[in-house]
Length: 372
Image: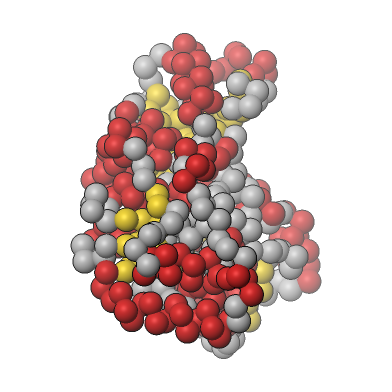
């Protein structure tokens, strides 16, 4: 069961009247409560978040960076996390027990994180142990539930980010012969390939079918497998396709193509540059005026980069791209509702990771910190 469902019974629904308030009224209330609560309140905002909410963020960044900043901010009694559920879970794992993490809308989940649940993972681990013995170490992308982080921590593995995935794969291969990489197959494949691992050494585990893809064809050469990729993906980044790259090369060959490594292998290979969200932001910031870019990542961020760099010609690699729908559930009405409930002393949608999960999940995160 995905961790999101563990907290479903704790979700409270926002009253309809918040949707009827004007934008100006909502913004005024958010600013008022921020001033009133001062340092007792910390608002981290993910790069993919809407501008209407990000304007009130005390810090912007990727999920792990924001969780770390939340943990470092010991003065904050309340952390209102403007992101998705697994990010708020990570913040709760890393913050002190006296701090309360709030997610303005509990429906703000992550389809990738939900592609690996504990039942599937335990079944896969048992079958992989039968097939390969004690030769596997698990790694999980931070875009995973607290339960999956805990599973990885329990079995000697660690979390990874898109920024440090190469270093963490190198560390993991120093521990065991093989890696089980959860839950994003594309980040795992792209990172391993960059380290010189051939595609023939990788195989995909299908958690729904409970078996390897192309199992019969691979039966004779399982000994060569070093990367076991979980069949999961980001629904946003899979919408950047090779046809978009080919069309752009024909129509505008001078435009640089910059994509996130959650995109498919063929899209990453056909692009000019690929890297984490921070890498994308830093690359655009450092690019010369007048340079032309097509970016393959979430649309709220692409639009923000377009607005922040008017001296550069920036477009989305997919012209029909839409923002991350679950991230967009954290809108201004839900944000203000969450703040008002804190102000009233009855915070809603508190994220509480059970202690036994938090301890093992933190172990996986700390192993990453120790090796990057």
